[in-house]
Image (cartoon, rainbow, N blue to C red; front, side):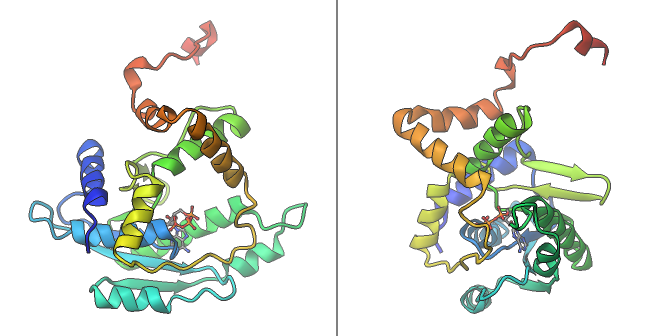
Length: 247
Ligand SMILES: Nc1ncnc2c1ncn2[C@@H]1O[C@H](COP(=O)(O)OP(=O)(O)OP(=O)(O)O)[C@@H](O)[C@H]1O
């Protein structure tokens, strides 16, 4: 497999945010989509570097969406000696019983259940950390979603400890663009499973994705600047009222 660009960017993220330590057992959350399949393969390769001693395994939570065929992904992982564990769940059934007012599935509920199930599976499998396939374009989309819908300047972190469940999450692809992932996927013929979630393509995230794509056509430099901005702490200048000092 040739994953040079991805591996270089994972290494940089690892150095900047200390994502992986000696002795780690990393459970990669695998939806079967492009990002998590590339992450699983790349981390497996990264684990072969001599200066790091850690193990990697894939964890797929079976959501129960119809016609999700994992046979190619399973065969590919077996060929490359990558462990991919499947965990059945009732998530789709529960979501169908708790529809939103407009009759659609609730993405926020889905995300909560999915995360909780990945954590349970990771603990059962003896993982020390859980890795997600979020990349830099996801980070910028989340930032815009939070600004537009939530009135806050925030996105997910490269590394996050959740004390409630005693779990550390890492996002090794944060310096990778979607285009890097697409290239790696094609170059190495990594299979992926197309999601059959009925909400796919009709989410607020999809709207933001399209908005940003248009913005990048007019302002191509924005793509790199948005990522730089996320860790450009020195030039952070936000308003502070007198009251904020005392809160
Ligand atoms: N069914 C699942 N089982 C395990 N982990 C999952 C599952 N679905 C998503 N994840 C993890 O959560 C991350 C973000 O989820 P999201 O739904 O945005 O991903 P996706 O777009 O469906 O797939 P991908 O990110 O793999 O292309 C994924 O990259 C993956 O690491």
